[in-house]
Length: 267
Image 1 (cartoon, rainbow, N blue to C red):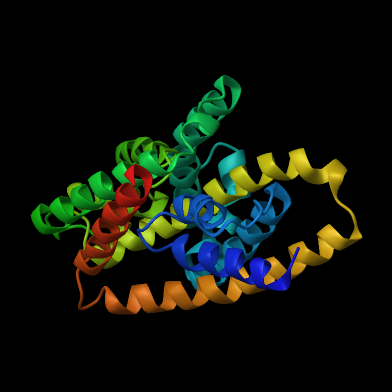
Image 2 (tube, rainbow, N blue to C red):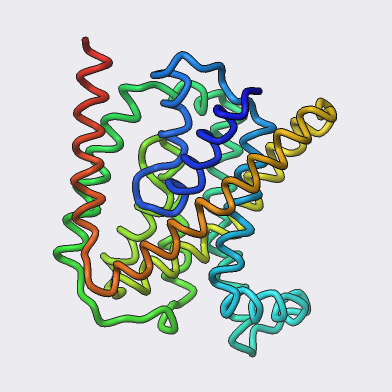
């Protein structure tokens, strides 16, 4: 694969995975709008690995205790902060895994990969994000996260399987509706991405494991490195801006992108 295409895929994935503007939608649009060949699932796995490493590094203060709490959780005990966080993340991931398997088995995942679907999802869920951000309370922090809310946000996250929705955007929307502060809503969304990316990466990885060759592994390593740098930059920028800026700029971008895509699809 040309290095320029690897770079484009990795940077798009790295930046859009955590910004509320839909990474899957942008990755589908890249070959659709530029005429480039589809990058394939192996590169998708690689860029997911890169973004996973970035979010785990950025939120290492939360990830470390959660990983340390996993052994206690496996013994049925969630009596530490880390074990409790691990439990909530596991619970929040179950809905998207079940919904993803259903779409995969029924073939609906391919049926949803159209520019028109992406356009409408980009517009509708962008407006929903704006409404939730403007109307939502700002009374809760990430430490207030409960088991019931983990289930609720997990169901919101499952909606992101519709291309154009944005996994981070829809979970931030759900968290804002529940009353979480902007920064903490984003923090919960990013933490929820870790097991979700692991699950999706494992599923894709199983499909491409038998097809990997030296050239593909080299391309994958380059893509992962580019995605890691791009994701770390996007995370740093967004989390810093959220202390003083709302989600409105992302909503404006989504509306512009959605309308442009409708014009392209209908033209």
